[in-house]
Image (tube, rainbow, N blue to C red; front, side, top):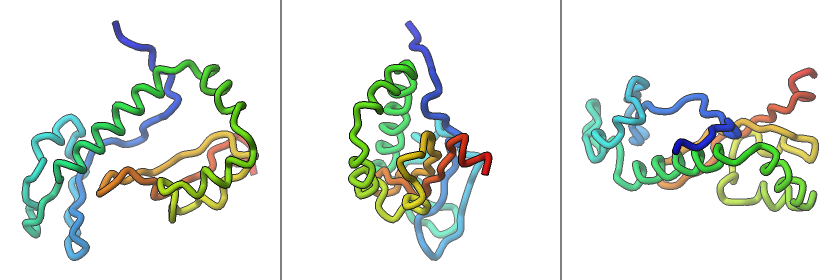
Length: 140
């Protein structure tokens, strides 16, 4: 039985590979996520370093599965859960290692209703950019 997909988390782009070697600029946006397994421990075509480690592949796969789980939760249940969080937890939330140094995290406040997060799965799952997508923010 297929679970409902409520699009609580919208995946804007999934896939592509970028070499992690700071001296290499290799990027292949055409690699589909479903083919990542074929790229594990393969050398970068440009510099020869490992293009996708087993650990990074497993992190990306776990993140994808987590998104599927969250997207199976009806929006009203998620909203009910979020209303139970105390307002002061916002600052604690921002201090989580997941958001540390993420561009735009300081722009998120108690009026923020919706955010867009760009993630990295290299060495750890981490937010690299956070953007307020609340309706009020877009109207400004």
